[in-house]
Length: 440
Image (cartoon, rainbow, N blue to C red; front, side):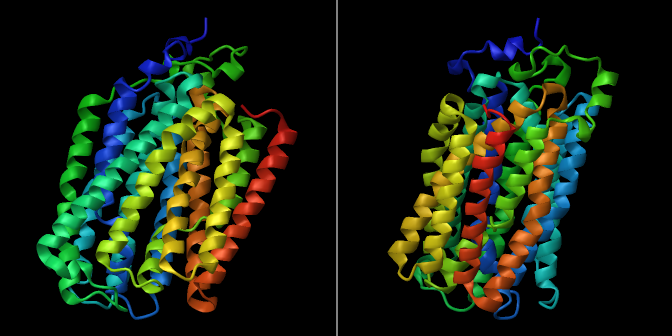
């Protein structure tokens, strides 16, 4: 009898409870904390570094931190398979991020010369925490439900992420209004004022509180599910579960399915054109002169769009297949970036930003569910480590080159190059995975 039976027999109505509900709450409070800061971090960087260098430092902050942390995603996923436990690594990762993130409030106080590099270092620690937790967390989520509901489970946690981001952005508006009053409405200049910088520092420090709630929820409400409690995914049901020592030996990366590596390679191509969303906010600040309130409002609108599309995207990924949803999302990404390269007025920028949520809703749950479809349950920590690690390793050239292109040939060209790479990835996914066999 398959060891995957218990979660596989859960009805779709019962999916959004237990571990999935608890992990959704952890995601909600974590994003509440981080998204009090993230939409404003590019503006904070612009206030600390020499004029014209903000795009380069945004690329460094997002690229170096994500790439270095990606190595830990590889290690932590494999380690969780070996230990047969996920939760301890997840708790450690969330804890490190919770305490490192608000320290950005102190950047530049001892002198502006190294302020940009201080943000790079602190963001690195935050992303190290993400690297430690991400692969074991994804494996824990996939182990908690059956294969017919994984798209929904992952999309639910992502929707809770986005809900936390919306509330975090609203909290940012309230806190900044307490410091700036109606000055929050002013149009942007080349750099934020000293009063705005002080308000941002206080906001970043307060972000510690919801982060602590997330860690407490994780520690008290999430239940460990050891990998040996579940067997192979239904696509591998003919293969018998192996003992722990044998499973560890077979978890070597060279023994994972070829289709899985084809998918990861194509995701890397897409990621090279998938620059950080922080660039979109810097674009709004610099080109369209949106002030602090408008930038936060833009971020809220994006996350509302993500929420609207996330759950339908996950359900459709379970019903019609992962690949069609990923293809639709990548094509939308290419169209949005192409549109951004040509946008001239604010309403065009806002419309493209809202459409951008379709990309997230179509791909976030579907990609993670597809990894679980390809990789047996005992080895999913390793599989998610490779998947997340590959994305992270591609993030450095992706974001750094985008920042350099922005600073040298202009943001329009940078967005156009991103659109071209996304389109290429969509073509490769349609062609190569179809040749490798039917994708669930």
